[in-house]
Image (cartoon, rainbow, N blue to C red; front, top):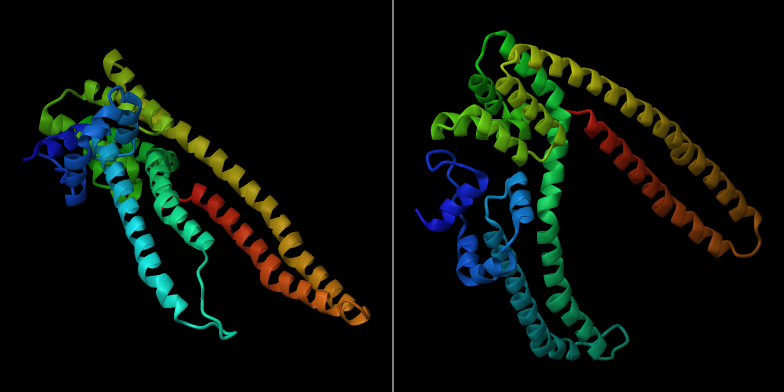
Length: 330
């Protein structure tokens, strides 16, 4: 087993017996070629390491930076090769062809420079930006999924606790229901694996799970379990109280989302139904009554039908989809 694989497992807190992380060929090559750069840029990178753990990206900071550097380098080389190929082959080939007016197609130096700028500089910079934003985007996605499914997971833990299930069995059962509880199941699986396979005590594992959680609400839920266990409290009562609290908060959130959807529905009727009808009527009347500028009026009609109206529909479709995702557990 290579050291890079072990480092990746430690980054996720995994044991060597459970869920091994296998680096791809590109990741291994990245560590080989740009590992020195990753270690140089991530000497004191606690924040990045925490982000990678919360995003469940199975790489240490040095490995992640090395992988990003490999992508940037590959994009730069590919862009450079495409630019040289276009200048050496594409430009002469186009010069031998004739356009609609019978003249040869000449690619100006300005266009060549723009193409080189996009392929050699802009695309590598985009790769840098994507890799820079990816951990935060994954963290946000995981946190949103956890917050949405936490009320249902809390109700499930309360039911399990009422059936005298141990905390380890509760987390094991949560881990097996990833299709229902999503990201919560992944963190529950980590807790169960750490306790059952590594042999760690539950309290210290939950404390670490609090730091690993991208969701503040789920971290608060786990912290409450730690406090209840360390103080010798009633864990059944804690799960029941949290279940009721999250259920009530979820009902209030759903009610708020429904009210927002009702408000946007009224706006949709006005902007996407009444306004287009009124605009079409006015455009047709203007088109037939006006004796001058008829061509301009016709162009405006096409712009409304094929431009403005579809954009209004797309905008409201995005709004309703976003609101519906906030109350959906799928």
